[in-house]
Length: 310
Image 1 (cartoon, rainbow, N blue to C red):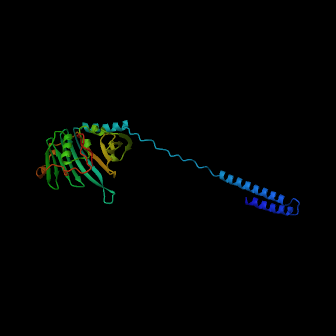
Image 2 (cartoon, rainbow, N blue to C red):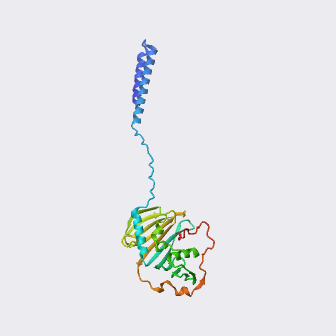
Image 3 (cartoon, rainbow, N blue to C red):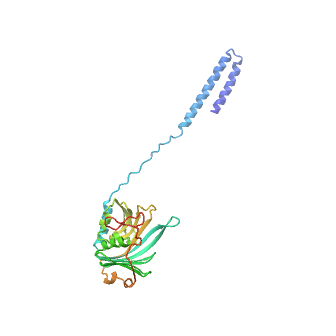
């Protein structure tokens, strides 16, 4: 464009010289100047339009909305859960180890992990022993169909109370009277599937793992209005190997993990396994709730069943 303007200026100068002495006069000079100006303007406009056309047009970006989550009970997930529950319900006796890892906020806000280990022996319909050690104070629990005993070996204190004739009823009585609760309660009741399926709103199959428990397991996730759970269940033996839970009312989304091992089903159990000589000789105390007044925000169990809690 600059070159065109320069040539136009040179031509204009020559024309001016030519017409200076001409009779055409000033009028022709003005016409020529106007023609050169219009030509330069048209050339500039065309150049601008050409440069604009070389810039690619911006594509309109449309925001795609994610499809809504389908809250369904997948048949495969439910089949795996039911097979595990049926296996546990059919066992007349069982022995297993439960390692519980739960999180609590530190002073910095970041959660800290604490661990307990419980060795469990159960004989249906009316015998249970739970010996808990590892992090925190050790404790022992014995139930023989007539009485339930809570023993603190370090303090040498024992609480004894009359108990109902079944494991399910004894677990509820222990919770109601003394806030005694075991994270694996849902696995040792008479009908685990009934407790699990009640109120279930979603269940889906995740895949398989070859790490947890040292065996191949199926991974399933399920949830009700209170808790979201992921469980690892043995493909061959149908026994749960690990459970992770996050509770809906917990704003910190702290994780609770239950690792299960050393499974033995339908084995003979010694009759004296559900009593303790040390507990019988310990100093007695009342079998009662550690906090007589309910803590604000904590609701008691409803519908006569044990509430899942940390």
